Image 1: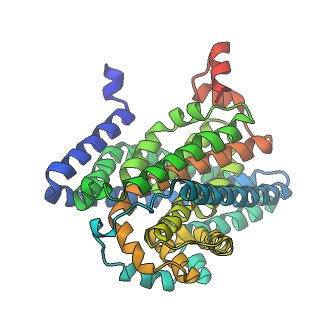
Image 2: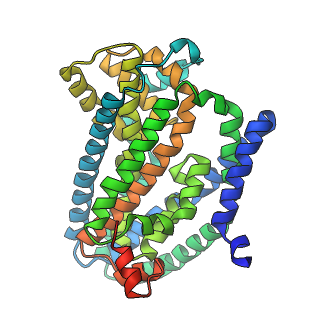
Image 3: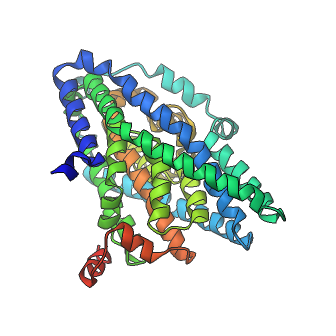
Length: 412
């Protein structure tokens, strides 16, 4: 019993439930709890950049062959492109088969003001994306510094103090993570209080489609990728359950990003691979966002009874393949990128986004969770592919002790 009350997962789950109940019965008070969620994410963000810098620079500096870093980076980009394209196609196919928007009565849906989103979407440029995405900037600086350090003859004089700093940064992160229940409570309370569960009813079919598609992607696509290297997706999800609950409560994959890096290294992924793949994946491997974008575009086409031709669908796929990559660099993430996509395609009225305003927040959990799990799976897959994965560490992290445990861990 004592173990339960000292378990972070238990308290995060309690916090999410309490937040949902407060949002349902006392929405006014619940909305005021938003600061708990936003402040928690703000504190976590302080750790993201030093962890990315330290992990990558130390990893590359300890690499004997610098060609390896280039090879891992190349494989990661190829992996991201294949997986996000696959996610995009799955979203379009499922939407086409189920037709979530065909039976929607537009008069039942309360529209909202989308002018701010459209304005931000039109202002989006790739140069702006690169300038305003600190994750990418830190990634580049860390790679350059790591390469220089690798060639520096007296590198141990710099590596030793950086290693000590890294240990203290992760120690500080573990302390801050104890505040996760407060962040999850604030995020969930605000969401339910602000938008209300009643907003789910008219657009419930779309929400259900997005969640089911994301679950299929996680357990079938990502599950098969991990199974190829005899790793159970279920074991992995159990291992990162605390982080998943934090992402669920705060609707932000950023909230658990530093913790994911630490856990992936602890379960056997090498520091260089983890340091390169996770930060890059945060910007370019957004599987959940890609599914959401493709399904939302198809949904709005069905709501407006627009029969998209094969050529138009191919154009939408092409535009989404580009715009989805900028989702992490734009404030408001997927919703703004969706606005920029509709603006570029010029087939579906941008005004239709107003119908998605209320329910978008509830779908952000599915996006964030899928993005988060997808980046974890990518790191494990590429670590194994590079033969940079320690299975003994994985067995210890997954608490695998007997031959039966090993058999279970290698099953889907």
